[in-house]
Image (cartoon, rainbow, N blue to C red; front, side):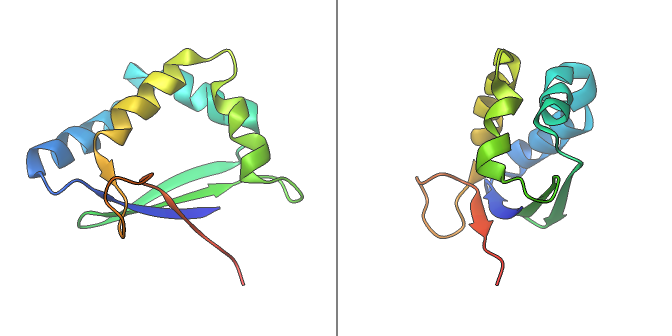
Length: 106
């Protein structure tokens, strides 16, 4: 799965966002646990200025919509992480809508 969004324009918030990710394993180890439980093989985030790209690899034949709910099952700290991160992200085309936009393969 490949998704994209922007970080908010505020450079202070951008620095906070990057710091959260640098310290994710220390502050929110439950996030990695949720990824493992869901069967994600790899989760990568790339950045170009404010633009973020998220790449999630998972076993062939599985779908993100099927696996993603497993990241938060009995794991409320992932919900806390997601809520915090949402304050630093915005939809590229439609402010106010869900931040992450899915790329569709063709």
